[in-house]
Amino acid sequence: MSLEKPDFNGAKEYVFQSLESMLPANLYYHNFDHTKEVLEGTTHISGIEGITKEDMLLVKTAALFHDIGFIYNYHDNEKIAVQEIRKVLPLYFYSEPKIERTGEIIMATKMKYNGESFVQMAGNDLLQKILCDGDLLYLGTDKFFETSENLRRERESQGQGPISEEEWAKGNLLFLKNHKYLTKAGKLLGDEGKEKNMHILEERLNASRHNFF
Figure (cartoon, rainbow, N blue to C red):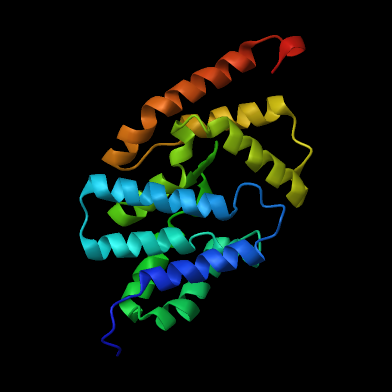
């Protein structure tokens, strides 16, 4: 077993180069900028939560790799990401336990249907909660509508369209109502903005169809 410390910066350079050069051009949401924003948000949340340096390394690594599977397949990308870290992270001196733990954190971002909308699969694991909150921190920001439009374009490009603005707004409102930030930091950073965005969606949906958007 290597006595080298995990080389996060080396892994980061590998992921950034891979995403920039290999992601399909029609991923308007799950793109390089998204991964950078999730890494930044996850790091911010982790700092507020006060986790250890070792846990910070793990959750930041999970944020870095969580969407790398989109290079290869639009579906089941989380499983592909876990396969990827098992191949790549040993090259950057991550031990097997750290790799397995990183994979567990990544898998928490997989969505499941709760009978009304899709929600994330994190349980009581703090690091999983941190990544889930970092992944969806944009829901409570002024960038929500721009980011949401990018996701609509992406879904249409993947054969799910055309999606009308009204249909998309209804789906977004339902998603926001079902979503809950899982950490204290996530709630602090995102709840107020998310409520604001829900209010805007409700106002738009209550407007006359003639004047919709």
